[in-house]
Amino acid sequence: MEKHDGEGWLVNRDEQLVIRIKPDKPTQHAQFVLVSTYRLRQPLGNPIREQRMLRHLGIEMWLQLQKVGWSRFR
Image 1 (spheres, one colour):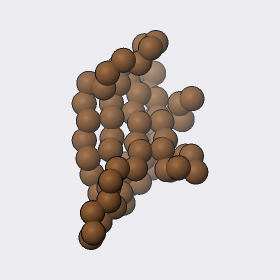
Image 2 (tube, one colour):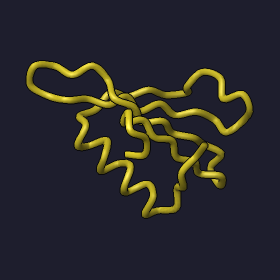
Image 3 (cartoon, one colour):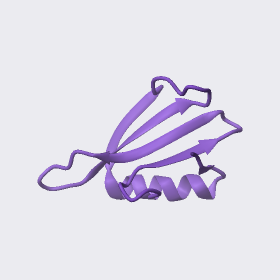
Image 4 (cartoon, helix red, strand yellow):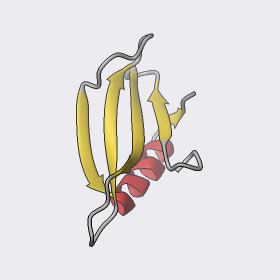
């Protein structure tokens, strides 16, 4: 993803949404990320949705969102 710590932000201005994907606590068998969705406004406030997923699925989501028009945020 975007930053050296694994956290990345994407924005879709048409949908007025921002997504943050950041590392979450790993288990003994897998690595996870936390995907948080926010409404695009300042300040962002609380997420409207949060989802924990396997890291490789988070990376796939990151790449797919950019292919369909989401861009980097911040």
